[in-house]
Length: 381
Image (cartoon, rainbow, N blue to C red):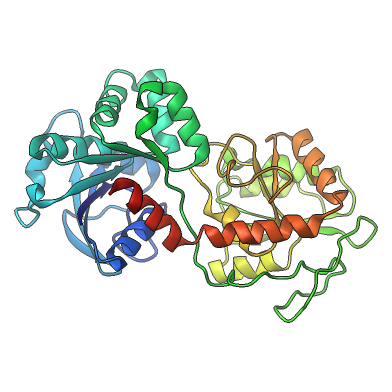
């Protein structure tokens, strides 16, 4: 199948900030499955400035053997952006167009209508925001609604987003499917034993789980995020300050860091920004991972924590709620100080922690990136 993938959420160079690799992983796996995929990256310059994205000149780029055409434009209101695309991209030759993020969806819908090509549109948190906030109603909302109605399929990036979208547009519900991201299978091919509660290191050679009981040494909690307000790390810290026998490690940097340091007790340690390999190592030596953030499109870090053997907690009705099932393979909490304290105490006193860990590892295995890319592909075929 020949696929045109259109989104501004795509890297063109290594180490690009504010540009996650989740959509790229879909494309890379589709190519491995013998599909031809080309990427157009429409960059709305004002939006780029507001989000702090790196500016790239118009032209072709290559990222991990994927060909990308970056095209800059000042406004999606005034011009036909298809006229800026090079003749090397034969738009009418594609079997299907897949679009994510508002700028990508608006452009892709124009191409799909012009050349009568089937269109698949993604749904992220940003799309729900545009569809529900008053400030977007006069342009972006109308254009997105037009694209979703014109599309053959609608790829919701989580179960939560599918539910929200279907509540807004019940007449489009039959088009929707869930397209979650997947993680690398490295490190989750076999169950990992639960970390010893007295500070010992867990290894693959450890044959059995050691029970975690409340009277032993402090439970090690870990969180990892870009330290911005909606991640609610401040509420997590304030909850830890009020609890005994809990220690918290905060991984990440961000504009909230200085404020977080001021409110933290001695039981909170700031690790800073570290490599993904180091993050996974920290997870494997922690008991609980919790990130009570809101407005998460998906949250790969939760799956990584589950694969690492952490009891994993996410916000109720957000992120990967639906993949995490409360009391089965993890826990859900309200993103408040009291809600966080309540769930941590519940985990502390939960009898069958080892079962939660085993279930979470099994869940993470099923959400490897190859499985998720194939799920997406099968839904759009």
